[in-house]
Image 1 (cartoon, protein in one colour):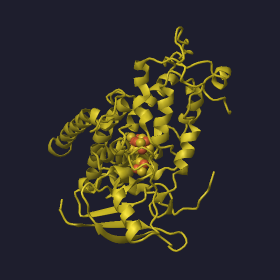
Image 2 (spheres, protein in one colour):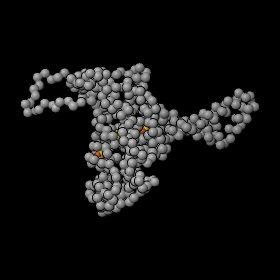
Image 3 (cartoon, rainbow over the protein chains, first blue to last red):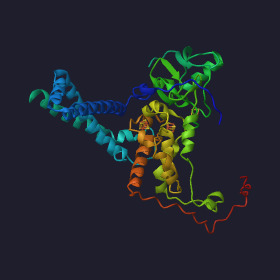
Image 4 (cartoon, chains in turn blue, brown):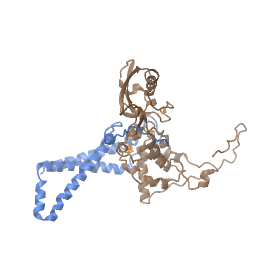
Amino acid sequence: MLKVQGHPNRLGVRGWAVGGRWGLERYLYTLHRLTGVGLILYLLLHILVTSSRAFGQAAWEAAMGRVSGPVFHAGEYLVFAAFAFHAMNGIRLVLVELGFGVGKPIEPVYPYKTSVDFQRSLAVGSLVLAGVLLVLGTLDFFVLD
Amino acid sequence: MSDAKQILYRVRRYDPARDGAPRWQDFTIPRTPGMTVLDGLWTIKQTLDATLAWRASCRMGVCGSCGMLVNGRPRLACNTQVSELGADVVALAPLPNFDIIRDLVPDLAPAFDAHQALMPFIVREDVQERENPTGEFGQSAEELEHYLQFSYCIKCGCCMAACPTYATDPSYSGPMPLAQAHRYNADTRDEGFRNRKETLAGERGPWRCHFAGECSRVCPKGVDPAKAIQLMKRELVLDYLRLRRAHASAPVAPKPKDGKRRPDVPDAPARTV
Ligand code: SF4
Ligand code: SF4
Ligand code: FES
């Protein structure tokens, strides 16, 4: 095969935001990745803090003291928001990636109706559910406390 | 949309012999009714700059050569009218996620390599019948529906340029090759699922796709690669759980019994391979 040395033009992380038609599902894709990374970072922090228990009560209380300020409370709220989205969107992705809701192969007749259109109600539904979870979480965090 | 007599083409240029990096160049050309983006490129080449390079052949959305970024979206230049863009500027750049060979010409070879690695052809275990066919493999109209939509792909690469996963992960096969893998997996004449599975189960396979759906939105042929990929994932999961019911392989269809060759139709030429 002919090998040519071209100029690199891969979009990289920019491709998560540009390069296509700015559909809702692309934003969900990007948000799913960002919230996923956020949740992993939280999990590491969580393991770090709770593991201090192994070093006795004083170490545990010191560690808990360090993560109890308003900044961490706000951080926890963000973690909850990330969880609400990641969980609900994740359920949609499991369904869609198992081929549910994307429709059967069809004869493409213009204007094309794609699998993205077929599963749109699932996407909206998962966002609504995430919103409901978030409202409940907000009440729990800031009102009922 | 304006009804101006002129239109501004802003074209991404890159000449490996001269330019260190791609640059933009502006051309103002006459705007004519029914003019496609590709028509404008020809006008520039004929009247303003003969060195401008791009790929095109059929100029009717069939060959898949003229995929490029048109005002930020991957589209076919020949299949896009300037008027439908609703803009006074036509900004053209080579399809991203591929190296630029020159101007608007991307190096699609990695996509074709990934395509080839997934065996985009009918695989049969019966090598004898495959190499020396005694007839056609029979297939019902309903079985055809399982893959027909995906077989309309013209390998233009627009979906690869739009895919956010392919943008960050060169090892991912991408929507075009994966949709074609499913096109053959879903074909009742094919027996290659096991062979393709080797690649599909790994990091080049469909598991890097998380249904951003951009591939299906930009596809100029309505192929809907995202659909093919999700349907293929279901097959792979079912196979992993040992619940997949492989389709029965299409047998060689019986020859029509009382058909007669018309005397004015010549015999097929002898085989050359
Ligand atoms: S699936 Fe569509 S966009 Fe992708 S290469 Fe084929 S025709 Fe082009
Ligand atoms: S649906 Fe999958 S293959 Fe298509 S653009 Fe999205 S991530 Fe890429
Ligand atoms: S020139 Fe063939 S698809 Fe555009």
